Image 1 (cartoon, rainbow, N blue to C red):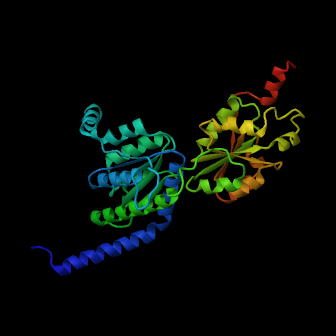
Image 2: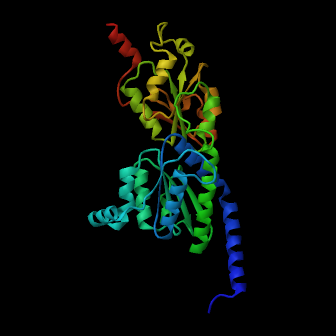
Image 3: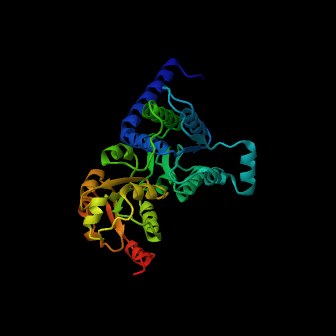
Length: 353
């Protein structure tokens, strides 16, 4: 028999109550997810989205709202729904398996710093799980939009990933809340990008201009140094530091503080502006900010990094700011030297000493 009016009203009431409970429980992680998307898009990254069955519609919905707009006029944002045409689908399924369809596209389209939004009501979609594994291997951040108990997908997520899990058992209710989450995220992005182009640029004159750009970029890694004549050891050390989190901020000694370090009256050989410009060309470096004090302690206090890194000539306990970072539950790392290179030694060799 068809449902009665009373039964339909009860369905509406149950749906509304479920959505209310879910939205209250998801408020904080949804804000984190919105900040993450805004931060990555502002850096010129893109969003990939995937889902099977009804969730494929969620992936398409999110991508279309990013490329077009939600409610406000703004710039187009790069969103791609991994729902391939038949030629791609049949080729991948034939050469690999259907479970690798999304993963193969992530490997083709995803780059470090991008975000994969993975929709699955159960958390057990094998195609989506393989996509998440591929994304993590390529350095993408994961935003998992799930339901029920989170399934096998929840166990794969790292500290820097975010899960928006709807506390409901009904697939229909979960999908309804997923739609609300998409709209909430898009409304946030509308506001973030309505009046300006994406924020770019790695070099910042002071920490005040940098702090607003760090929302959603956790775990945040910080290191500091002079970086006068960039060499292989510097590059290796910065690459290792970057892999410890989502974003690497490098504090640079200004020229006066370098002279106070006792490296010689002629140092630095390269001025602050030149040193920061060279470092900005490294993929491992996300942001650069100078400091004028003898130590970067004030900078560390302002940034509150999750990971503090220095080179192997520093014991972890001797690194400036180690106590502050550990007090917040962060980590302090001394990166062993992999290449015996030194700016001071290079200068001596150039001068023939």
